[in-house]
Amino acid sequence: MRDVAAYATAGAREPFARTSIPRRDVGPHDVLIRIEYAGICHSDIHTAREEWGTAIFPLVPGHEIAGVVEEVGSEVSKLAVGDRAGVGCMVDSCGECRHCLAGNEQFCRTNVGTYNSRGYDGEPTYGGYSTHIVVKDAFALRIPDALSSDVAAPLLCAGITTYSPLRHWKVGPGSRVAVAGLGGLGHMGVKIAAALGAEVTVLTRTDAKAEDARRLGAHHVRATADGTAFKELRSGFDLILNTVSAELELDKYLRMLDVDGTMVNVGLPEHSLSINLMSVVGNRRSLSGSPIGGIAETQEMLDFCAEHGLGADVEVIDATSIDAAYDRVVRGDVRYRFVIDTATI
Ligand code: NAP
Ligand code: ZN
Image (cartoon, rainbow, N blue to C red):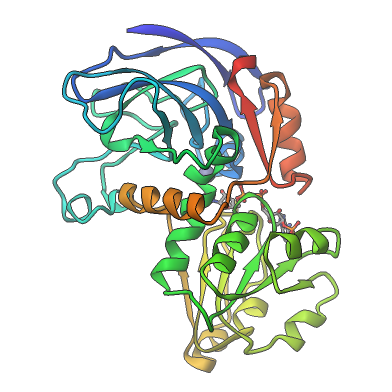
């Protein structure tokens, strides 16, 4: 056991402060990663502010982790000292259920979250807002050479959470895809959907991000605030990827789906939403959702992003700015992911 420096919050209304947390000794199947960058996902904010329910405090969030391997266990062959490695939203799973065996650890009933969770040893897990992490090699990803660690870190959540549903619903040339919300997830959704060959439309509240959306790869951008887009784009999409972190009027979005179209929700707002069933009965539409992605698919996504030159657009911040960054994310004032330089911890 060693103590490492971290930034933690002591409660839902408490600011972040420097502290130290325990990391276990490196076991035969473990790797010790010196964290270089940790992305700030809106899920960190929902969790830290207890918008999703009770959290385990002190809380060290961070599930978009990129760094360098400093030590490996005796049985580790996947990674070597000096390799760059990433960690996403999971750090363990049972390894035996049908989901684990199929490489879908995200569906394992007893998988262990990178933070705000308890490992199989019963101890709380602590995330990436820290200098080091010890993780099973099976849950460490190889970061391709073509991606620097700052722009790779957000891929470990924002990248896989958008890549997985785009692949599951077989997005490719000829697909008409709308991405709702241009934040951390949304901007990766646009990049990946465009790289897969889809015709991509961004649905964003105002025109403020229109130029960015086109630069990121969108073919069309529509502001949603005045409501005209909902009428004009009726039955116009095969897939809507909803990355919005707040409550939306789902009916308006569902009615933009063509026959057999699907709205996939990855955004997880605090409160429940309701729909009028007319919105799915018409055009035989589907309303679905998708959680992160499996480890093998996360590696596939990293390799895909490297091949297509798709890093995240990041604003690197010091650890002392976490609270201010949270407020800016909530205001929609981030282009498009804050990443903590963990050397400042
Ligand atoms: P983010 O960077 O804050 O982006 C969310 C975007 O939603 C904003 O940029 C904004 O886009 C839009 N938005 C925010 N408030 C809105 C409102 N009141 N009405 C309409 N649009 C609004 O957040 P993120 O990190 O991308 O995360 C997005 C959501 O996905 C969060 O709820 C997060 O918890 C969830 N998430 C889920 C998974 C999963 O496994 N399913 C994984 C990671 C994150 P515009 O400015 O363009 O309108
Ligand atoms: Zn996340």
